[in-house]
Amino acid sequence: MTDAAFTPALGRPEFTDDYDRAIRTWTRERVWRSALLAQVAPRHGETILDVGCGTGSFAILMKQAAPGTRIVGLDPDPRVLRLAAAKADAAGVEIEWRQGFAREAAGSSGGFDKAVSSLVFHQVPMPEKRAGIAAMLAAVHHGGELHIADYARQRGLMRVLFRLTVQNLDGIANTQPNADGALETILAETSIAAAQPTRVIQTLTGAISLFRITVPEAR
Image 1 (tube, rainbow, N blue to C red):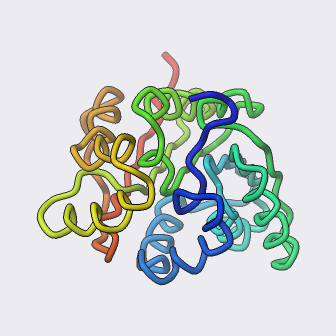
Image 2 (cartoon, rainbow, N blue to C red):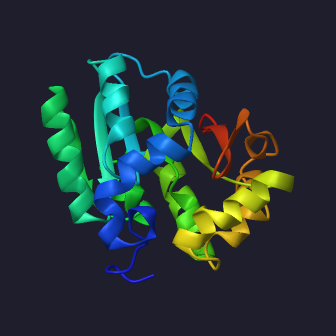
C-alpha cells in the first residue's frame, strides 16, 4: 500500500459524505459504539490514540465522556479529517487530528495510555493489518491497552450479510481474510486471550467483534 493508496469510507470517495448516515443505519452503531466506549473507559488525564478515526465519531464520544482526556485522531484521508474537525467544532470539543496510516501510529508521539481502532482493519491488505496492529501496540506504553472493534470472523448468516454489504463496497481481497479469522490470528500472536472477542454484535452488515489487548508491563 503506497502513501496515496487507502480504501475510502464506504469504499469509494463519492460515498464519503454518506458514511455517517450509512454506519448509523446499517451497523447498529449506537450498540457497538456504546459497548466500545464502555470497554475503553476513557479517564481524565489519559492520552488516547484513535487509529483510522474517520469522520471522528468515536473520538468525539471519548472526549465527551471524559473531557480531561487528550484524544489524538489519526487517518490517512484528508477529506474525512476535515469532516472530523468540523464535527468536533460543532460539538465544542478539542481533538488533535493527524494525517497518517495505522502503520505510522507509533510515530504519533508514543506513550499513549490507550489506542483504539474501529472498522479499520477489514479494509486494508494483510501486511497493513499486521503492521497497523504492531504500530498501535508500539504506540501504547507498558500496562496500557489496545482496543479494536471490527468485522472479524464471520459465520453463517453474518458471513452472507457481510458479503452482500461490506464486501460489495470494500472489495473481496482485503475483507475476506477478516471474514476467515485473520484478525484473531494476528491478535493470537500477542496472546491467546487477545484473540477472544469480548463481545460480538450482529448487524445487517455482518458481525462486529470487540477485542481488548493489555500491553505487558516491562520486566
